[in-house]
Length: 321
Image 1 (spheres, rainbow, N blue to C red):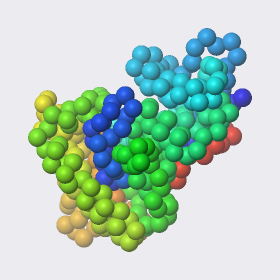
Image 2 (image 1 turned 90 degrees about the horizontal axis):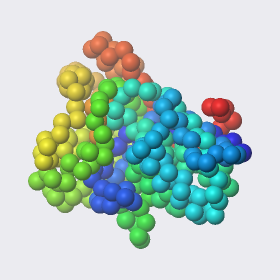
Image 3 (image 1 turned 30 degrees about the horizontal axis):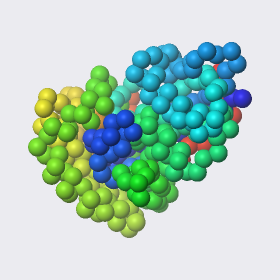
Image 4 (image 1 turned 90 degrees about the vertical axis):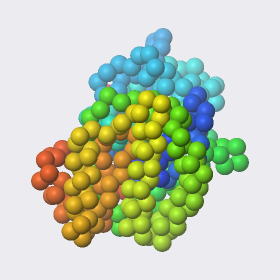
């Protein structure tokens, strides 16, 4: 049986940082995200007759070592609950290959979980599948939820995400600027634990999440975007003050930030948002999308993506092999 799923990567609005349990990939606090409709991961899964081990190919590269182990953490849990021992052939492709901090680990594991569960004949409730895909990447729970998603760090003993508003609930659009980097996200999550600012972030984050939720429920785009920008600065300040003073931004990141600030000084609605990497999401109103994207191109960034908010994963018929 061959199954293909598509999922959208995420932008953290209120970002998560640091893992309370790195093995189970459970976070310290709740967080909120949106999916980017214009980007996607496509993953095809097939039960492979005669395979002695799972074959996993991502963006043209066969996985081995730690990257493969992360995939196996999801596959083995699905096999455990399905009582199946089938080995799988998996091919996965991201719509954008360059750029760090674009949320593709989230969409990759969400698409994997949806496709592999169907291929193995696993019937799972939503929370159970969300907790399984989280084993590969924490934010996969948010990509699985789609739209505006709230990821619970611990809700009655479970850590999963649910959609709190549909993709079209707000008139929000984004300009995405992919920027390359060799940084490993897991290293950043470890680094933040040594920051003297981390405890302060944990004390404030509950109120920040609630403020973001209210802004979403009120359909207040400017407040949502402003809060995401403020949380960007909080998150990166915490990362920069860890043991090794890890700086995730590149010179291009600062160039985009300065252009966004300049646009706001000219009364153009634009706010930046940066996850654990150098790539930049610029949140704006749909009506301002063309103006913001033109300014970013004029600043020297030709390889940008414009997007609305995306929904949860779906099964498709166009297989990768």
